[in-house]
Image 1 (spheres, each protein chain N blue to C red):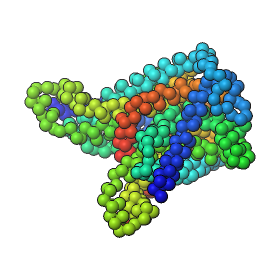
Image 2 (cartoon, rainbow over the protein chains, first blue to last red):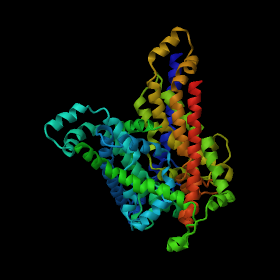
Image 3 (cartoon, helix red, strand yellow):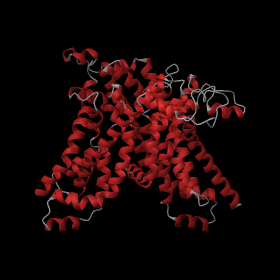
Image 4 (cartoon, chains in turn yellow, red):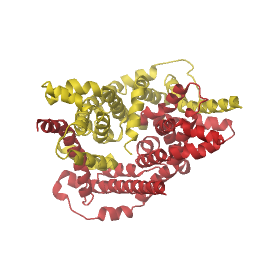
Length: 272
Length: 292
């Protein structure tokens, strides 16, 4: 009897994993087929012979290299700057006393329910006024800090013992030095977690870059892919190669840093 | 005193960014929704007029807005329960003591969550292809005639829901799995000593202990599903017959295609108020249930 139950449990999980993985594996397989090969019936599972033609074409004709660079630059910039701002603020909200601290933090928390899309129209006008629309700045500037990031860091920093700070102060270190050489090492796990979370989010972001980057030279990978897919509805092999290039980096980062990502997800779920 | 000054230096950059690029636009959105901000005002602000609630009144008379609202509601009402059921099912299976290769299965089931929405939407558009899509091929082998998933107004939204469940269920699965793991083993032992069957253990130990987490996951998922945009943008472009136009899709077109920015702000605000109302209602229900 337990034997049968084990078979059912593992069988169901295998079925589930097949459903989640087959589309991704198939994407990779189709991306290696010759043009037109996938548009036949029955749908071929593997390429009759492997070709990298689609990838070559993406880089030589569709400007994929450019989009890859755009995505990489924007993701790196957003991650580094927002990490610095969020970690500093989260730490201060947790460990440093200043007038109005708790009231400001409560106000921030209460606005977590506002969906970011509400702000999109005026934000677009503001950035246009600042001359940032159609520049990297339009994507980077509004993402330089996030309430969620501050919250996550604060929760973690609350557990840092006050004695650690007091000892450093008695040694004559100023607050900035304490932050850099005492606090940052202690907060390292949450910093890594937030970095993974932020960078994957920035890489996958779609609606905002779609709105503020109209110059195709500035497109990020998701925006470029959406635009390509509207033009090349029939070129399945080409589109699959584009999808591989877009998702592979995030999947790899996730696989390597899975532990940190899952941690961030759990922390994020506390916000409810 | 010196500490307080330093603290302000630490929080100022983040607060400045959030204040200027989030709080200010949200308030501005409210103000703009009361104006006729359009492409003429975009060129010259002197063309701007305050119109009170006329944008809201006109929205209520716009059939496409109601359709977008209905489509979004359809997506939420059908998609969220399916999504959470899948998450819960997967979490329970992963939590079972009989699982082999738990880490592998967890990663495999979670993988769609980290993928790029646009990229996997492109894949699924292809999987849903009527003639040579893998889905119809598989169904065909089971004797089901081909379905025009993304071309038939009756099937387009169900197709998008299937895709969204596939993409998202892993997220809540992880949270629910952690919830399951935090239920004290003694409770199950006590139930077993009392002779409770597997089903009764699930019914009287697992479910009540997991209920607060399910309620929270439910609230977050509903709020998230109301923000449907990229899926129809890539897979159906709102079609066929506008059966997959969502509220955000409507807002995007209204604002950034037709440049009716006043009206688009109103759409954003209606969506926010609705999400807010639904969230508040659920919180109250959860609290009420908790008290009862």
